[in-house]
Length: 268
Image (cartoon, rainbow, N blue to C red; front, side, top):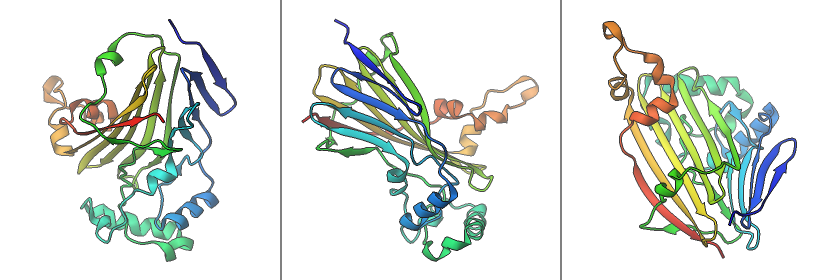
């Protein structure tokens, strides 16, 4: 029997209440310069040039209050700031970019410490109100996700993005879809450093209505630009469409198999 659901629609928030859950996604403008400076002071490093700090995805179980949120600030707190983090991607432009970034924000250079200038994050979401994930040998049942169903709610959103001083792309985003049988979330960190590497960190969350748990998978992939470029289909006269290197869907489709960690969280 199909579940009843209630749509949530405001100027900035959309979502559903269904099967004892409330799923909401918020779209707000990019943070102002003053708030971005506050972020930099709190984090201790120069932050991405585009932060949508008021955007979020919330998945909340109404009876227990268990909640999983996706937020930019929490994700940035997981950027590596260890002594050698600035050299985690060894390219000639890295030092020039970080120095240029400091000059552009000279008023906060007193708090700057070494950091991963690509803003790579292995953030999986912020669990609260008793929600806790533990390792599991069982992952997401993708056969269930392949069953054709109506999409009751769908959204995609960006949490932060930076062009690395015109030398690539660093982006954290998410997609969510709610079906009559359950919901599925994909949060993706995507990195392209021109001429050097691609990196994708994916966090997937699935719940089937009527069960008492969430399943989460976290996967990591990394490939050189050279390896990905070698997989571009040849056109006539052996030309290659190098614009595909800017296409996230193409890169995602040809990257090597990921390393996957599976987790489960029981609903209290």
